[in-house]
Image (cartoon, rainbow, N blue to C red; front, top):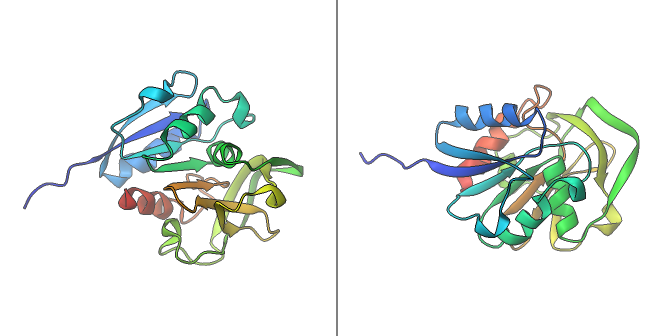
Length: 196
């Protein structure tokens, strides 16, 4: 039987310790190789040859995250992207959504995942109401979310927790799949890798 060639991923480190939890999940998948590049060391115009791009969480806002937004602009037409927390927010901003600051930051907060698009591949095998872990102060402003970005999940307060682009293989998760509080997080990362 012919061996399956591993999928080569780019993991963008947005200067956050959570990136190592994501790296561990990718390593545990066993079907990937990867490069890790910090967001301020990217050369977006020369990013080629990757099966997928994984954007890590990070501090601050997308506009402060090195070349993160430029990377999304340069690669979204030809390379699948999954953004986590800051990465998710950067995807939203690139496609025209605005962010709004929460009255109370959600750091170490847990809530149920309410799936609004049951066919979303990230959520294959994920139970409705599965707990998710939050570490964020900002969310996508629902009213500003463009038609091309489909909301695929919300939390119990109706805040946007997951998006996907209607035309391009671009997805975002506001919560942290790599957090121990997100019980189905590894399943979501594995589903994304399987789809590449």
